[in-house]
Length: 239
Image (tube, rainbow, N blue to C red; front, top):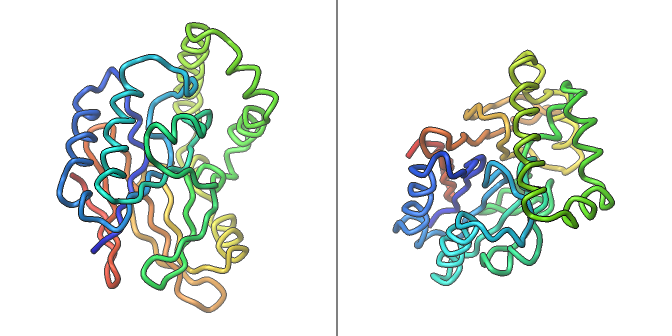
């Protein structure tokens, strides 16, 4: 048996082949026979609210609910693109919402699960924006807007994000090693799984005289990326 992790799918109408790949993967034997499926944020390119009447959220809900209906627990953690996703959609989609920074036991190994954006503390500009848009007041104000206004706001935010990415050094947008050590130490773990940076890799390092492991999930812009965890292995692969 295995536990599966994916993140940073950035599903969008402009990449229909990736949405189809997502649906096909969730219908595969690997997923339907798994112990659990975890989606660690940025499932879509932009989430404008659980009341979005577009086709894409409906397709996502059907695909994830079918996993739950097959007897496989599905968990979801919001990322920086879909932090407006709430309990209403989670219920329709059949998954359980997780707080960023949750520790789950994976076959006897306590493992810290994160989206990963809060680890990028060298990107001061991004962290300032993140703090401002995560307040209950900001979210309530946006969700009170008409759908079309929210779609326009999301398009503007994506454009600003691209501009920030293009003008910022890659090292600044990666995780801070000190921050990684701090959060792992605070959680009392030596294993961390996260996404966000689109730099899939398995990192081993020393943490307080112990060997620690940080696994970074890949994005789904051009292909799928899956982490398969079993009782004795961790395999990060492209689909």
